[in-house]
Image 1 (cartoon, rainbow, N blue to C red):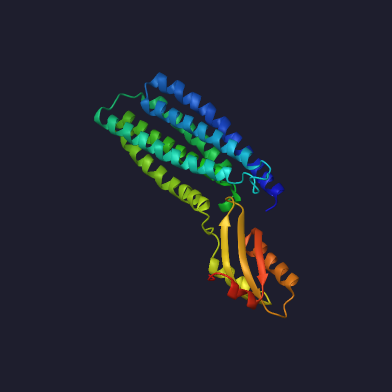
Image 2: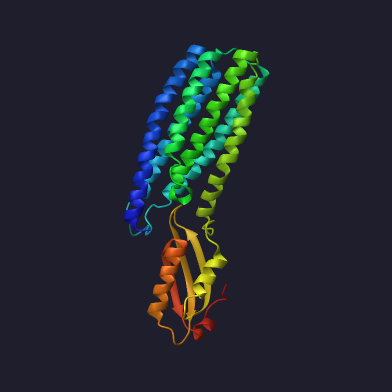
Length: 299
């Protein structure tokens, strides 16, 4: 992927995050006002939750901007992984948020407080609409077409959507059944869903920082495709890793036959890697059989 493509994708992601940031700030203000009026700790807590989303969005926008900064002598790949760091921080931030929710839920189960149910349900319905819009904005592409910054915010938005639905259910139970414990009980379930949803994001961020093979690439299949290139006798020292959530890199040694045209072999390998595996950053060393005895053990 060319640098211009990365900047275009980052600009598109940035637009989505700015749209989500605008509606999140507006709805957060509504929740604080109505929460104070209705004496609803649930709404005020959810407003605090939305404030954490504002912080996450700012982090996402900042890391997207940083990821487009040009490369320099000390950082030859530029700041591509800034997006990964921001997404990982957001994922871990969600876990801290869940811990806070569960502590608050435990306290409220012991000592439930009265809540004005109708305003709570009204704001919860607005929250469902707002978060549905934000979820739509951040999920318009699938898989790696979305950067990790957008996927991180998508997880935040889903947790908000589930939270709004939970607040609506809790408000209805308080209003129609008089069960004050409904709100903390729903909060515990919401926390579990947030943990489940954010685990994949945190795991992917760690895998990228550890330079693991991308989940979308089968290394055995990739090796078979390289060996299928006419003139390639062996492939060893094969490494594939992620530069960012969208960009993959590869290095390998390919042993070619004595009759092979090295330029043709290298060109065909480049086409295979780009078209079948979306790998555009590659370093392939071509060598003949007599070089192998001078190298470390191959794999």
